[in-house]
Image 1: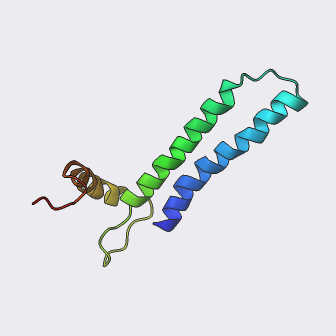
Image 2 (image 1 turned 60 degrees about the vertical axis):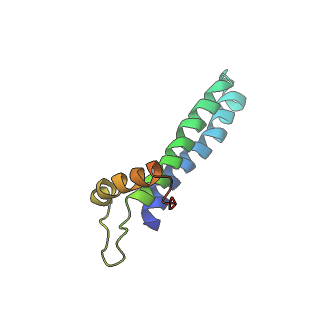
Length: 97
């Protein structure tokens, strides 16, 4: 799970961070007029993808301690998404009296 989270979070986060010096290079060195909203939109997209990577990393892990998860975790994600949504809809697992 940790390696999958590291992969699905690390790559979009790194790309999102590397776009800041790239836009700086375009604007200062190459003298290209980059609109100020463009770095904001690009970083928003990649940081949002990193946030989705955290969610996928958690949901795609094997929640059974006796069973090893697969490499990509797709089977585990298909099994765990309904459990995840059900826990959200029922109030986060809190017991109602």
